Amino acid sequence: MDELRKIPVFIGIGTTRSGTGWVFKQLKSHPQILVTEKKETRYFLNNYGKNGFLKQIQNNKENPKILGEFDPNYIRIKKTFKNIKRTFPKAKILICIRNP
Image 1 (cartoon, rainbow, N blue to C red):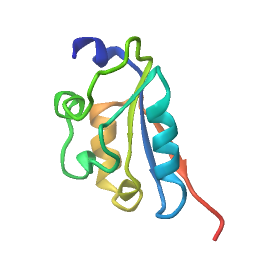
Image 2 (spheres, one colour; image 1 turned 30 degrees about the vertical axis):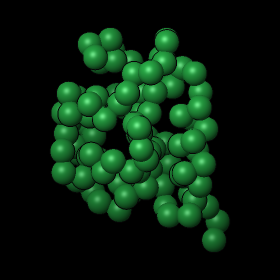
Image 3 (spheres, helix red, strand yellow; image 1 turned 90 degrees about the horizontal axis):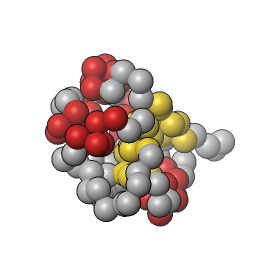
Image 4 (cartoon, rainbow, N blue to C red; image 1 turned 180 degrees about the vertical axis):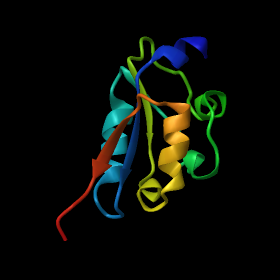
């Protein structure tokens, strides 16, 4: 788990029906990207902390380079961004949106 602490992190957010599930599956299939076992853990809605977040990840890849999760619920609730920033201040936020 200590090796995962040094890997760059991304958090994917988006609106419903904007393709977040497809993007999550594509990222999960990449050999160097680790994502949470399931999409929408809702971890940052009420929690923060690296150890708790890293417990959501199964390190089943040989040489991971990037770590992250996708949860479209985060886009609606302001406190999640504060929790993400406290936990991973350098995390990149990926946003999926669509044209109605």
